[in-house]
Amino acid sequence: MNDSNGLGFYLPGALLLLAACLKLPALWRNPRDELLRSVLALLFLATAVFAATAIPTLVAVNRLTGVPNAAAPLVFSLITAFSGANIVLIFRWSSGPQDAEHTRRRARLCNIVTLAVIVAVNVLFALGEAPVERLRDLDTYYACTPYIREMILLYLAAHTTAAVTMTFLCRRWAREVRGALRAGLGLIAFGYVLNLLYDIAKFSAIGARWTGGDWDVLSTEVAPALASVSALLVATGFVLPLVSQHVMSRWGMWRRYAQLRPLSRELRGATRRSIALGGGPWTPIEIRLTQRESDIHDGILTVSPYLRSGVRERVLREELEAGRPADEAAAVADAVALATAIVLWDRARDTPGESGPEAGSPVLTSPNSPAGLVRMSRALAKSPTVRSFRQTV
Image (cartoon, rainbow, N blue to C red; front, side):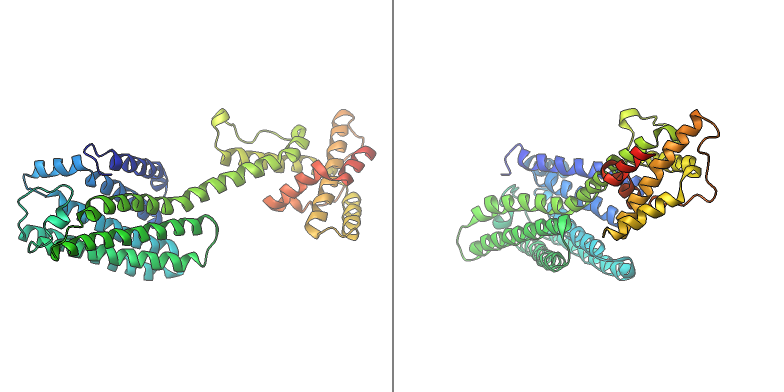
């Protein structure tokens, strides 16, 4: 997979970099969001791992530094940092506000251990001798070389520890959640199972070298493929719940916006535009929904003097006696009262003095909540009771 042009690593890295860049505006708006910072750190580290592991990058680092195999400790350091970032993100992701201080302590300890491993990897490389450049089989070629051997084993041991820890944390948490979060945790756990297989392949190839065997294909072919798929699965697992949450939030707003259309249309004559949609068709749904709700409340306020208390009370009583749930009965009663008030208000504009305002007009209860507005809008569009009253006003 790690061919000479590095496309097998550069392309996934580019996708991860794109995902990270798409999250940057959110961090700009919420710079103190520790969870968001951790997600971006993970995505950028994953991008760096893919970029640094590609053969052209290995060659470039070795040439730039003038040190054969200088890219090796760089790659090992980035992979170790990526593993540590995963654990820190899970700590922050799975903890509530009441665990904030405990989470910070655990994250701080994880960062210290990760940094210690990275320092040790680079110190061991500096102490060892690796004069022959090995772009694909460094692990097995230097499996018996003092210090370089220890560097490789330390990196693999840290990687294995992180894989076991992440698999355990994700599986335990996945039992407590549902939906996109559970799916994301499943992808992360599966990615780390592949990481464990990567470590097994590496250890097996090194062990074979110690006993005089040659299982290098496990290290040079199998392990890189496992690592590439694993990194994509892990990054996708972290991003999936966040993207899903964003999409579901937008979908909920668009759905509510559409559900309020009958109520908005009913009050069209009594409303005044509260917000100018300067963005035209590109106006964000948040602004569209805010305007529609604001205009609805404005229209209700305009026609409220023409609400008839007797109408609302009678309809509410009949709906409750028919066995309708209290909130739906209130929505139908409010819809009937509003539809009647709009007719009377419209007549009063055409014929001043006729059907004037009523003293002590009733207060509608449905507009007190977004869900109530939706129920009221639905009643206006579908309730046979509302249709019946329209014909008799």
